[in-house]
Image (cartoon, rainbow, N blue to C red; front, side):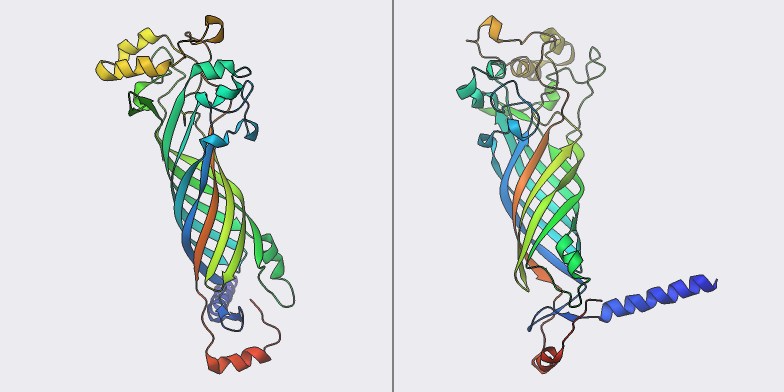
Length: 325
């Protein structure tokens, strides 16, 4: 009982101390243990999927990244940062990923199979993520005799996100949703291992960043954030072609016609030896899940710093050893 009372009193003292403790950010502003930030991001977005890529047979990772598939995204965020070292932010992102096999026209001699496959897609991305930050230089600076914040602060970040995607293909000038067409037999009894994929899923964002405080009220950042996905259907391409006669068993009308066309979009001029669009032949690579990533340029407004009154500036000049604790 005594130990519980001691812990309770100790926490109360720490709480009161942290709420009442200010230190000097500069000659004009106090700083708080916790500051807040709200801002905007813009930048390029790209993805690594089964569609498009670069020369050769296609590989996983940056080696198969085609910069011609780059689009722009935007986001808004709010964050809280404790002693310049640990941050937690909520961020909403809107963008689009896209690619097409026609990008391989210039290297079709080494990528003839993918070029003649002639698949393409686009997918809007809507994401909400909760991301933690760790600023190692600022963390180390807290233990110096006179703590300070780094003007340039590199940091690590990781978190959890929830995103919506919807792969589409162009047909006769219209963008057609691909998931309802079951282009690879998802949900068909003949393919019990191919379940219908969900358009709303979780992801794991992770990356690195660099922050710079322009002033006590303005901070700019640049970040690279990758997303680890648990799906390979960002582009609606995963494994093999199916028997097209099965589509009539599960679809009808317009959807049936769209599925028959968009399942196999091979180039008509391709030689038989250059195309493999037959039932059971490879349409995508099931060994690697898709991913998408962004390069974020952020501008944020910092809240929580109080301007020093003119009456207190003299005490600032006399203050020789500021402390953040």
